Length: 280
Ligand SMILES: Nc1ncnc2c1ncn2[C@@H]1O[C@H](COP(=O)(O)OP(=O)(O)O)[C@@H](O)[C@H]1O
Ligand SMILES: [Mg+2]
Image 1: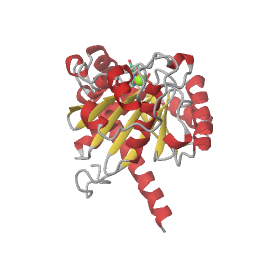
Image 2: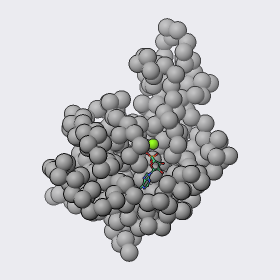
Image 3: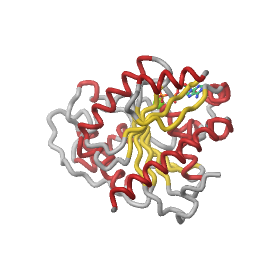
């Protein structure tokens, strides 16, 4: 049984986690599991789909019809114009750099099994690297979410964290880098570790996913020596099937839930002992 947080009153727990890693390693799958696990304990949970290629809804168990209600914020031109004074794509517009965002999480999220989902969406201008009103709105919103109290916020990031600024990231309790047995995702983990230091992130943890044999664990631990590997998730046919069926691994893969629960307990432990160390 996971006893780490059982004495914490419902809704009072506060935690801000960003899930990162190479594309396809299982960030969204793990984000969905973690969000559902925190919610099942009675915590107030906000899951943020910060990947422009948004698909966290199905990993949370939200049906495609319900997910359609969570319109990606970056695509809501009226909202962006109302808040920033400028419409996305409008040439040369002036816009405010501190738009009001505090009502957005409640107004634009959808709820499922105790998890609220907010979808950031894709900015058309992002590819051009422009400084546009939708970026300002989303960046300010993320900063706001990270500083909100009494809430577990889980950010399912796009591959890479280059778009995070120091200001945005500094309130995050921990980054979790999901890796799989293979050189490429491990390189990404090292890269994230490096960037995280520069951003002032307090902790970077690693979760090894899609493990098929013990040597996979050793491979990850050996290549990421010095990083904190907090657990492993087995390669699971049920997880693949859940994705094929558009179901949440939380609902479809009991073995994955058990493994994710153990990782969550470790995470809670590490962060609790860190907070204790810093309060003495
Ligand atoms: N432990 C696992 N076992 C088997 N398949 C997995 C596992 N974790 C993730 N997957 C599958 O890998 C694919 C990519 O996972 P996803 O969570 O979308 O990755 P990311 O968000 O990092 O791009 C999905 O089809 C998912 O079902
Ligand atoms: Mg993803």
